[in-house]
Length: 65
Image (tube, rainbow, N blue to C red):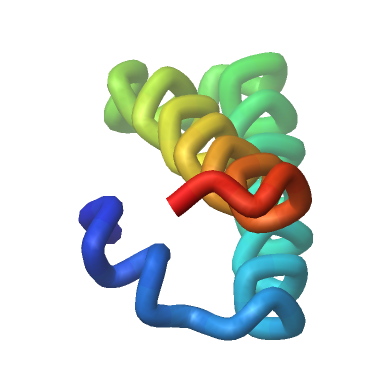
């Protein structure tokens, strides 16, 4: 998901996306621990997605455009 697409979402949708990203991160870590993770680059991608969503939420909280 790109930044422009994230900015188009409402706060409620962003929080829902953030929750699903945290679940995806948990599942990736679980698969990594059990050696079932096929794409090892998935963990950093999910972490970046979480950071982008949190950044957009914080910008809106501070009133930054």
